[in-house]
Length: 266
Image (cartoon, rainbow, N blue to C red; front, side, top):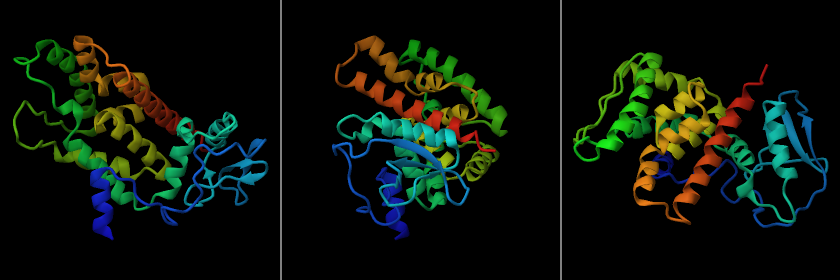
């Protein structure tokens, strides 16, 4: 079982949530079946629930959608209220993050997965100036500054790959400090953070955004720096690059907003 979970993590396959992958009805394309959306205090006094015509919303794994702050529950409620004739989960990123946070388990395995991104971090693999001087200059200006921030924040340097096949050798103290930072996150924070890391392929960019050193817009620019450079050079492919931009923007901004709404906890 443990090996199966680790294989799923390493390949990016979504883990089956508690209750089994088939728990909960699929609602994509289903007609809107409710009239009123509201937010109600949880019966145990620990958070807030979203209600549809008075009935509490549950996750796909049938967990009660109980959220730690009223502002976060309100954001999820707004997504439900914005649905028209049919329900489109793709337009509900906050609901998706909330459900994922409640349905996934084994946060230690999620942290193990995330730590691997530090070894393949986008900003640690700049191009050589001899190959693409303009891109290399841009990367050094943007990524170099972020690596410097990381060094000061986590007490150690990031290794940089200059076209060799050797593995990155980051400062051990910095690596340990990053893991300690992740381990103090709860399930909601960790899943939102994971969304940012996986979207931008950079632990460092995600850390800078989570600590509010940069904005979501700046994080996207840093994570997509090389892609946008190539678009400038070769042109945009409609139906490809434009969709990638939109998806990246929605996912990163939603996760960043999700984290911000969690800060309302007293």
